[in-house]
Each structure stands twice: as structure tokens, then as C-alpha cells.
Image 1 (cartoon, rainbow, N blue to C red):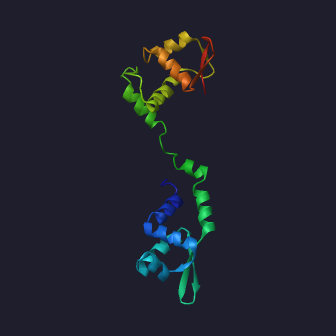
Image 2: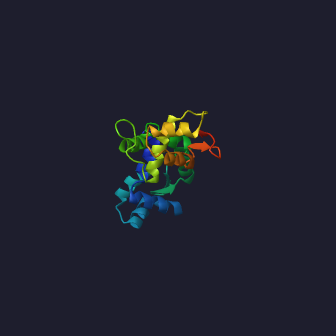
Image 3: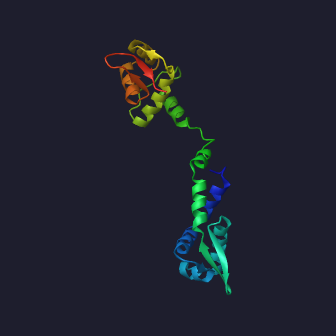
Length: 187
């Protein structure tokens, strides 16, 4: 997320309870600094500081009215900023450097012996799925395997091949033809 300075700036601007109150009040109607200071029980200089932060990211604007600046929320800017920074592309880009397989590797390492065999089959569903995602890699896509071939491959990892086979099919990582037919990996 820190690779998106606009996203970070908006979150920083809204990451203060006083600023959130100010945004809430300005969502109802425009106010002067003095009015906002009285409403949130802070000094005008403090309110000016918070308004400057909100103004920097385009969430509020000011217009001169007599001797005062009247501040108002910029709902169109708020909506556009929100739409832009929370787009699917922006949110995906925020995770570009995250290792999405780190959890699976940790679980597989925790449940594996040095030779790659499983110490035990995880009882917890989340961990079992991580192990199954690892095991299914032993099967080639678009190749059909007999039950015996599946058992031979799974036996490299654990003696309870029947449970592993059932779990691979039940987790929709592999499919099976009915009546003892072939098995294949789902892409």
C-alpha cells in the first residue's frame, strides 16, 4: 500500500478522530473554522491545521465569505478519489510485492519431514488445503491417472493415500470419474 502515495495520503488525512468529525460535520453543511472549533471543542488553530490536511488531499475546500473562510466537503472529489484508489487495479497493485504462497510454504514446512513426506495430515481445514495445494503439484495438468497411479504418487508423501485422494477430490483440486475411473488435476 505504501507504493500508492495518494492512497496513503487519503488514509493519513482520515486517520485522525478530529478530522473524521470535521468531515462528518462538513458532510451536513459548510462551516467556518470558528464554528468547527466550537463544535469539536478545539482551538481554531488546531481546526485550521486539520482542515489544511484535508484540503491537501482534496476532501475539503474553502471559499471566502466576508471575513471568514467557509469550508465545505467536496463530495465529488471524495467519490472520485475513492473510486480511483479503491479500483481493482490499484488494490491489486498494492499487493504486487506480497508473496501469496508464503502461508502455504510455512504450513507445508511445518507438516513435512526433511525428505518431503508428511509428518501428519493436518486436521485444521485451512492447513489441510495448503498441504493439498502442495500435493496436487505432483500431478500434471491434462493427464489422467489411474487410482493405482494416484496412490503411488501420494504414497511418496503419506501412507494414508485414500484420505489424501478423497480430500483432493473433495477440495476440487482433482476430479474423478465415477466407479473407480481415472483421476485428473483441475487446472
